[in-house]
Image (cartoon, rainbow, N blue to C red; front, side, top):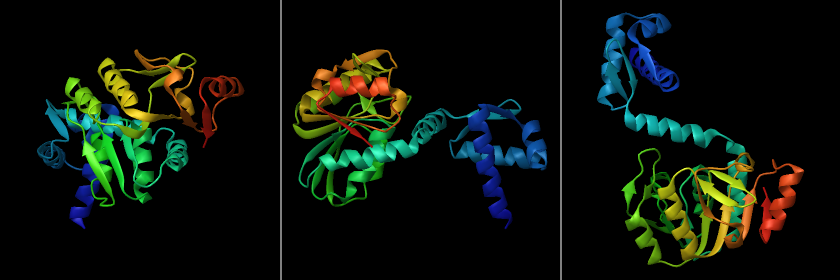
Length: 255
């Protein structure tokens, strides 16, 4: 029982650190009604797990945990919409196809939805997607090499782009950080290069994006609507957005 209480407290401490970025021993002792010595042991345990970094009088998230919590927060945003988009998107697939999955939280949901389709070959730069698909023996999984991105669990760089150039896929599922009438954008120019290479390597381009991304702009544009075959989006678009997306791409699926 004591072990269970300790495990619960450790998780609650980690949650607090993730939201406040830094906490003190005094704050934690007041919050959990335990001694400072107990809190220090808890912090030592979390530091040994590489989840936090001890500071003078407290703790802050470790660099890997910052990335993990950031990705998890993005993943939880619009989750129901992303899952609906994923279910609609995989209707584009047939057994035996070769598929490219872009990095991102919506394409991660696509990865989870496609596991029931047999004999797929899946290429990706996403470590999160690789983890989700690793145990599924009914598909062939290829993680494309490259530089590990420090802010999210994916790979990029010239090696990644060169690897993509060696393959031809039936479909690429592409995400975006922002979308407007002129095209699709990402916040990272290096990731933009990988997205361009994915688009070049696939016969059919399916964009998967939730409605919160629309009428937004990010740092780097990586494609125009002329290269998009299908858009899969949730039903949250307003009438004006629905009008221009229908004009922009041959097929729009509202999930």
